[in-house]
Structure formats: C-alpha cells, structure tokens
Length: 197
Image (cartoon, rainbow, N blue to C red; front, side, top):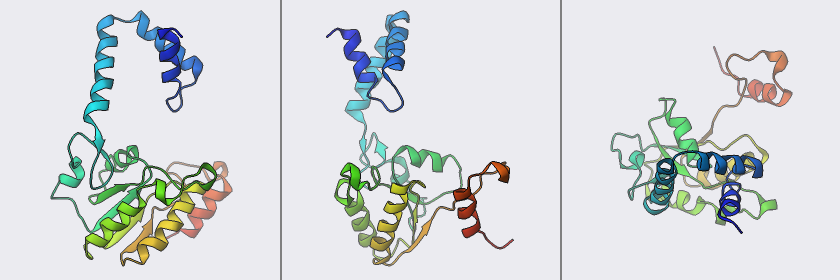
C-alpha cells in the first residue's frame, strides 16, 4: 500500500471525512509546502504525546487537571455533564456557565454495545459522592437524540440517589425561527418546557 493510500485511509477514519475528501486533503498537502506538511505532522505528534484526559472531569488537557478544574473561581456546586469534550467548549463560549464539567465520553447505546461501563459514569458518581454535598445541582447536557435522552434518564436515577438536584438543558425553538418551519417534536418540547413571563 502506498503512502498516499495509507494517509487517505487514516484521514477517512475521521468523523465527517469520506474517502474522496480524504484524498483531496492528501493532494492538498502534497501541493503545499513541505514546511506546512511537517508543521502539521509535528502538531499531530505533539497532540498524541501531550494531551490526556483531565483526571477530574475527563476533558482534554496538557496538565493533570484541565484549566476549568484547576480554576479555584469556578462554582463547584454546579456540575454540567456532557457527552463529549468538545461540548465543554460550546458551553464555555456562551460565557454564561461558571460551574464545572464532567465528560462522559459518549452516550448509552445498547445496540452499539455502549453501556454505563464504557462511559465515565462511575467516575461521575464517585465525584459527586466524594464532594460530600458540595455538588448541589447536576445539569445533564446530553444531546436530544434517542441515545442522549436514554443517557439522561439513566443518569437522573443514579445522581438523584446521591442527593443533588438534577436538571436538564431546556429544549425548544431556536431564536430567530419561524414556527411554520419548526418540526413538531421541537414545538412539543418547547411547550412542555414553557416558563412564566
């Protein structure tokens, strides 16, 4: 197998990158400067060697604790549970959340063989229990997919037994949307989650 075929195969394993896109990326690298390709290569090696999961929350970090867990100014009474590490960034970019996070590393999916044992559920429950009541609210911020909802329901039962309040991110109509173009499921969730004006 040629170097081009091997790299195309490796790139096509990335999410959202098919065989054709991978081949285009390889040819883009070949047409670019050698220095650019070497810089990319060094960055990938550095990523593999220096980045690891935060020992507290599972977010990616260069240090034993990520910046959020190491920050003493964060509100440790509110813990937000997300499926994947990149979702931490999405919530952080809002500038509205000052609590801490826990990354599950996926969602429950029995058809794919993903149960609680394959996720960071045990460490989440241990973390809440070890906090001895300091964690007063756990926000379950899993996605609105069937698997995300199943994960949320499972977590609620496990977390509620430990004492904290369990909340879920609100679901509903995106800002700027026209009702006629919003699907029925989203409208139903918005109606169920309505609040006083």
